[in-house]
Amino acid sequence: MNRSSDAVSEAMNHDTDVVVLGGGAAGLMCAAVAAGRGRRVVVLEKTRRCGKKILMSGGGRCNFTNLYSEPANFLSANPHYCKSALARYTPADFLGLVEAHGVAWHEKERGQLFCDHSAKAIVRLLLDECAAVDVTVRTEIAVETISRLDDGRFAIVAGNARWQAASVVVATGGLSIPRMGGSGFGMEIAERFGLPVRPPRAGLVPFTLDAGALQGTAPLSGLSIDVEASCGRSSFDAGLLFTHRGLSGPAMLQVSSYWSPGASVTIDWLPTTDIEAWLAERAAARPQARLPGVLAERLPKRLAVQLCQTAPEDLGEPRMRQLDAAARARIAERLGCWRYEPNGTEGYKTAEVMLGGVDTRALDSATMAARDVPGLYFVGEVVDVTGHLGGHNFQWAWASGWAAGQVV
Image 1 (spheres, rainbow, N blue to C red):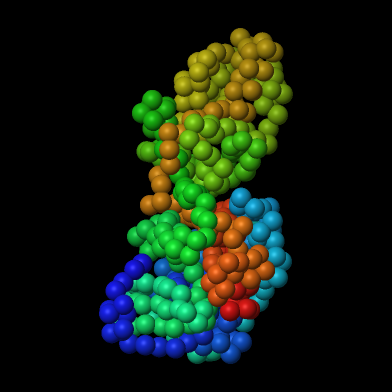
Image 2 (image 1 turned 45 degrees about the vertical axis):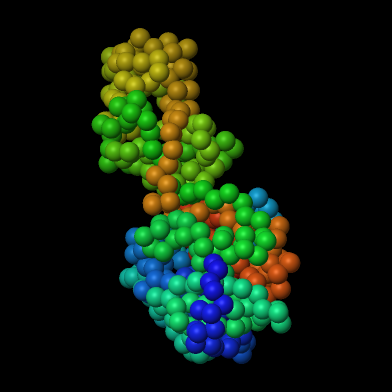
């Protein structure tokens, strides 16, 4: 982020109060709030249009918040950091903004709110909010340098222009989905000004399996089923999808944020069933039936057959009358605690979020300000706060952007 002083002096100079780096959810929210307080605000977005990740989210309908979003839905080295912002700008607050703009919405499940028609409505809402308070939005303009001036203000050079501002808000997102503009630029800025950064990694991302494991899952590619998935102490009831590369679906995306190389992922194929009791009942009712056929009463047939064929102890195709209580107990334990050992994830190219980022120890939880660099703020995904699937990451964007917008 260095450039010669001659090049800087040749740039077209602008004076403003706040420069927001990034025209995504957190950046546009911050800009609108700050300008609403009478601040002169400029948003610099490096891609062709603002809100590209908003547009692709939720299958194009944008899961813009979650009614039940709370600190427990977020991962961070400091789990308390997000509490202040989330408490002061709630899902109800953003929903009020959505309704004020006439955006039709619906609740899909578990508090997840989506646009009825298109995610474009959320981008339009944010841009209209910015336009109403005279925010200047510049797209296709990449920041080349950011430096601190002797008077404490900041100088930002982008393209052939140079802005001076009392405050800079870094809302550049993270490394996830690079084709949509994801990058590590925000973390570079933090390090440039001496702020610590926690190691980033892909989150809410599908798992990959090695060749051996894929032999057992390949016949199931495209099949989905609701399961309980666990990694460590974290469990999620959601859908699992088999892919030609490994395991995906909401359950896998959720536990991926808690997974580390070498760890296993545990699946309960029948989370709402007392499997042992059910097997005993079926043995009494269908003594001549074979195990795969009985399992197919509760599981997709392809899955039932494959589980029996690929279990480590090879469950096989015994008739139910051949299974004594001990055998049924072993089968129940296996089906309720099936383990996969991913060899990795699909990485940032398909990850919905980035874990890690600017260390919250260096930031004020009420304002998002860098404690030791007056006038510098970090909001959204670039900060070491990552939400669960289901609208929580957008709620963090709104809440952190609003918090910074109140004070810049």
